[in-house]
Each structure stands twice: as C-alpha cells, then as structure tokens.
Length: 393
Image 1 (cartoon, rainbow, N blue to C red):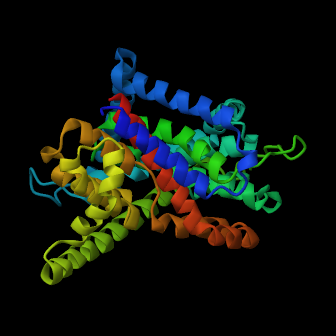
Image 2 (tube, rainbow, N blue to C red; image 1 turned 120 degrees about the horizontal axis):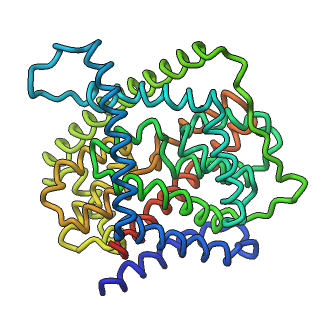
C-alpha cells in the first residue's frame, strides 16, 4: 500500500491529462517516460542522499545570506517600527523580494542569466522533445518570473501558434519566480522549495506533452532572445528595484484581501452549516490528497490547504500550512509543501494574460480562451510532483 496508492495517483494524473488531450497520436511517450524517470531520480537525489542534502544546504545558505543582506536594507528604512521580538510578514518576508529582484536585474544585464537560460533550455529540448523556444521559456520562467519571461521572447510572440503558446504559458504557471524563492524558504522547508522547482520544470513538459501534443518544424524552431541592453546599468537597476517593490506590494495586497475574505467565508460557513469553507473544500480535495500519498486521517486537512492554494495563492496556502504543520506527519508535510510551490491558481490566469496583452493583443485573446485549461494542466503538474515526492520520501 505504501507505493500502490501513490501509483494510482500517478495513473489518475495521466488519465486526467489524457482526457483533455487534443491529439493523442502526437503524444511523444518515450520523452514522457524519460522525463518521469528523471523526476524520480532527482527526487531521490535531492531528498534521500548526502549529495542532495549538501546541495540544498548550500542553496539554503546562499538565500540565508541574501535575505540577511536584504534585511539590512529593510532595517535601515523601517528600523524601530517593530518592538523587539515582534515579526512582520511584510517587512520580513515580502520586502526582501526587492533585493532579490535587483540581483536578477544585474545577472540579466551582464548576460549571465540569458546564457544559462539558453543553454539549459537547449539541453532540455533534447530531453523533452519540445522546441528550443519552449525549453528556454521553462527555464526563464523559473528565473525571471511568469510575467517578465514573455518580454524576453516578445519578438516571436506574433509568430507563435496557439499550441506553442499554451506550452509557454503552462511553463510560466507551473514554475515560480526566483525573486520569491527566498520568501518561500522562510515559510516552508527550503529542501521542498528546491525539489518542487526542479521537478515542476519537467512536470510542466510532461503534462503539456499529453494535453497539448504537437511537433515543431525545424524551420520554425528558432530562438530569438530580446536584448534589453539599451538601458544604462543604473536605469536597469532602478527599474528592477521598483519592480521588486511592486511585486512585494501586490503580493501583500492580495494576501490582505484573500486572507480577510477567507476568514469571512469561513465564518459564514461555520454559522450556516457548522464547518468552515476550507474544511468543506478539504473534503472535496481529500481523495486527491490521499492518492498523492497523504494518510486518510490527514487527507481532509491537506485537501483544505490544496484548495486554498488553488482559489487564492501559494502564500495564503503556505500560511495555512504553517498553522497546522505541527499536527501533520513529516510525510504529509513534505507532500503538501511541494504541492503549494507553484503559481497554479486562478489569479495567475489574469496575470499571464495581462502580461501577454501588454506585448501582443492577439495572443492575449488566445491565452484568455484557454485560461481554465491552463490552470487544469498546471494543477496536474503540482499533483504529479507531490505524488512523486510521496513515493520517494
């Protein structure tokens, strides 16, 4: 039963993906099997080996140092606002995004990130069977963010078919931006953040290859990366700092709204039917959590967090997870922690469509039409990643 139930979970994921597939004859099963094997190997290495421990420890130390530098800047501006021993989510978790964003801008300006994105993307295209553009976009989404990634390929947007556009958007929704990774690491264990990012990269290709299979002609498989080097260094730096601030404020505003609304809805449901809205959603998602490897005794609680992430965002879900983490087994905590690390929620549909709309009106209409299908696929990616972790941990 230890492996049988999660195996049924994998079958469920692939079955749900096949139901939505537009052209089953085009599915590249060899590439899917190869990527699935890679996911299992990476999960085992990252979570169950000394090498994985050292690697994640090194990444965690880097982000710990970056966050300490960020907090120096935050303390300089907001020092004395809080009493000693108090904690502010906005000051301690969100505002450090500004510093991380500025570092991303510097790495972009000096062509360091584009170099890695391009060559890692080319390697992934060999493994996934996808085009160079799709593979580059998946890596770029994880590094620069789901909105900014489309700017780097804006010259090609007008020539991209709806099928390819779906894959680009699916990658953007299945991954997370490097600018918020540090914030995630303050809310859940860093090893689950790193594992989710890596596994979701391949998971996004797997699900997109089933739901939206197609072949790219050699003549169409051209990667043209937009050069944003027209700005001076300090113009660029100022822009990325302000972008980071916008992200922090937007996330903060969404958290205020979503957390308050969730509390209101929970209260209304408790008064009317005796259980909270999150508990009700937990019952709906409990079977899925169970097939991911969560023990049935914890499936309702886990299902509630999964649903919260889908209808609000990953920050609200992580906050909810933090409230019940001590009552969960380590196995369940690992599965749900990995599940919540992605941009797969309703708000992301609007974010991605809005980002594309600012660059290409026609493609924005295309994105809006397959918005729910996009969320469906990205959610399957999260379930796939969580199920794999449930099998290996």
